[in-house]
Structure formats: structure tokens, C-alpha cells
Length: 101
Image 1 (cartoon, rainbow, N blue to C red):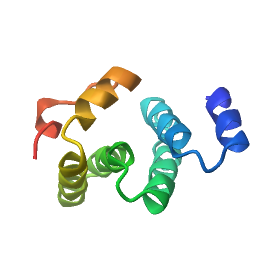
Image 2: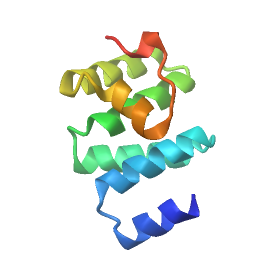
Image 3: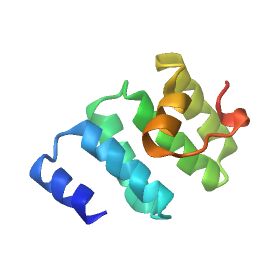
Image 4: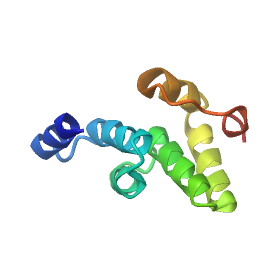
């Protein structure tokens, strides 16, 4: 985690690094930190499917089914391969329920 923090500190506008750190934080149980990164990326790049999908997972974990579904649909509309990309890059299992709209 410290390596990601240092990388983001050195390149704070790099959205790919923020998405990386967001998923790292999500996998280590740091949901608020993960969501902060996902939200920042979404504010700078509203079409970033990875950040939107990550945010949808956090909404689901918080019990916001409607918000999660809306964000997930948006991410999948932008890039239907997002769940597979997340699994491949972050070793984060995406359930079949979250693979579709």
C-alpha cells in the first residue's frame, strides 16, 4: 500500500494509479480510502469504467442496491469487459450477479 501511496503522491493526476490504489484499498478493507480514489477519478474522468465499477462495488457493500446497480450499468455501458479487466488486473473476484446489467 505504501508503494501505491508514494506513486500517487508523485503523480497525483494519474487516474490509472488512483484506480490501482482504489482496488488495492478495497481488497484490504479500506473502503473509504478506495471510494475516495474512485470518486476523484470519476470527477476527473467521468467515463472511467474501472472507477465507476469500483464505486458500484462499494455501494453494494454499503447496502445501496439501487445506487450500485445504476453505477454498474453505467460502467458496463462504457465497457462491457470491465469485470473481466478487474479480475485479471486486481485478482478481485466479480460474482456473476455483478457481471451483467
